Image (cartoon, rainbow, N blue to C red; front, side):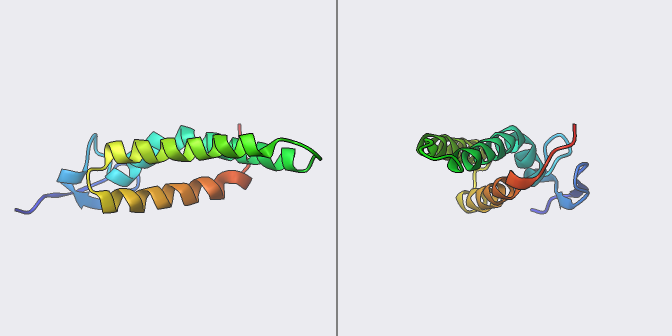
Amino acid sequence: MSSILVFCRDCGRQVPSSETKDQLCLDCRVRREVAPLRDEHARLWRKRERYASHQGANVASIGRQIARIEDRISQRIHEMVANEKRAHELLARELEAARGQRYTIKQL
């Protein structure tokens, strides 16, 4: 059985209608769902780097917080995606985006 191809209203890609919800493809839904966690990851990473520049600062506890955020990102993605392989691909992409976002300065 084939699905109808529809356009994602966020990224504009053509995706099967079976993969869309609220006119959003799976990638865009995952990106929107984990955006607050990605922001928190970037904030904690910058905090860790600030603390690491001081002698005797406890960066291990911040490292544990970062690990918990990454676990929560993983958990959210696995809740949304039934296919295990696809979930791992999206998780890798989102963690890479979170790690790349560390040095991005947001405009208010």
